[in-house]
Image 1 (cartoon, rainbow, N blue to C red):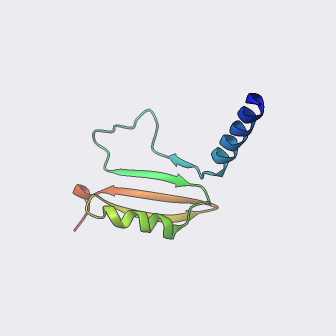
Image 2: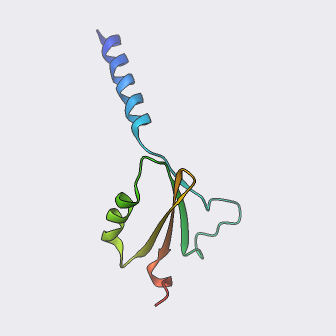
Image 3: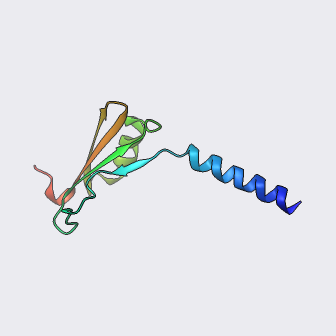
Length: 87
């Protein structure tokens, strides 16, 4: 019985893991300096929509600006910190 429950829990965890969309931080490289950067670029999988990202970003407009753009089949999202926004 424990093996069956363990197998069922493992399968549910696997399904839940595959059901989530992926987000990749594009700026991660050897020259990345987190103390000086004010712009961040992410790539979202097609499971996310521009509307979902804009809706989530509405809560943080005083902190950063979000610019989502489709790039082939992936969604590129640029974040610009609030203190570096151009008026």
